Length: 311
Image (cartoon, rainbow, N blue to C red; front, side, top):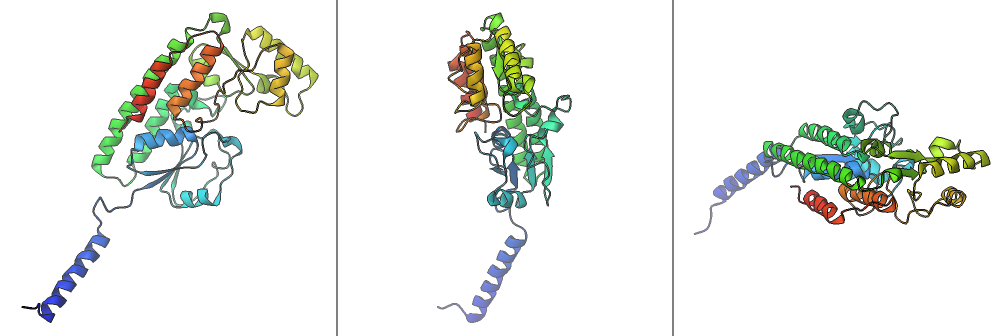
């Protein structure tokens, strides 16, 4: 027997009403995932790891790019305008991001995490203790977004795991650096980007350009001052922050007789294709091995495995 036309009308009306109710009051599984934008690679990896899919995290500055001179693309601007939360490092690491404005909350994570920073050094994450403080700020911000109670509990669980890994990274760094002969516990680079690292682990830092040059062409007087400081530091090598190596670095190498390390130390973010843990352990091993120590690569890989397993 066929269905009556009046019953069909009633069924259609009920279905339509149900659809309307669902659209007006979506279930948690139907609700849009909050959009979050993170500025640099370190902050992006940290936020994605902590979020674990509870939010849609978009990265602005790709790994290996210079955050100091980064300019927003139209795609970046769309991501920002569609976000509920924008996280930047602060301390003028990304000048183009510090003046953002729109219908979103803008948080300078580093400035909240490390307010006691007399030199306003933005390279905070070279100390795992600072990165842990940044993780706490990120979680507090994510907790304010419209995510369900289960997701908020998972955030706290991932926060605990992340803090534990960073604490172990800190101990691992200290152990590796202890293998460097005392006279060679120094990091000589072009710029003042590793102060938090060297201060944390009792090393010396010579920032050749920032400490001894006045900008522009390297003057003979500046070259002499740099050469004297490098020789006095007893470093075995000069550590480049980018390839190809600058002409200035090559001049200093020739003047001092110090070779340029074959591996980069990444100053301004994560290495291409690497997490913040992989970048941090790579930097440490680069310094340790070049300065006459012995770096335990196997335990570095275990730290990364734990980071990858955070859920």
